[in-house]
Length: 101
Image (cartoon, rainbow, N blue to C red; front, top):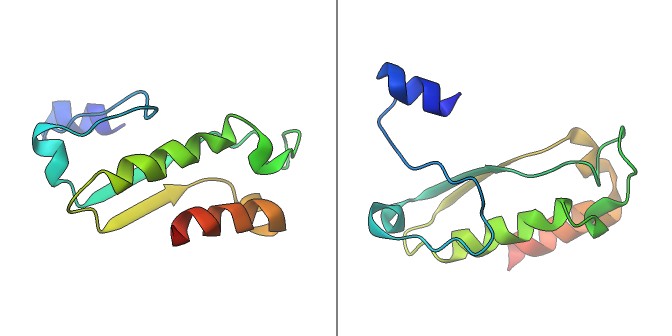
């Protein structure tokens, strides 16, 4: 969706990364003030196995936080996932611990 809007000229061009693991911001990316991210929901979704944040795919959110920490001007983060995450106490606690760090 973002790529299409940039091609249409409705949004300014920006880099879209396909893999956050080990991402090192460089150039203009170092000036980013915000990170918008979603992460796989299989571990926390009611439709999945509900293994919580123990699921390797759900734990990719840790890499998003690591990326954010590398941004000297990072101020804002918007994370998207399923509502069930808020109702799974251990998973929600894990997310809050990441945020507090």
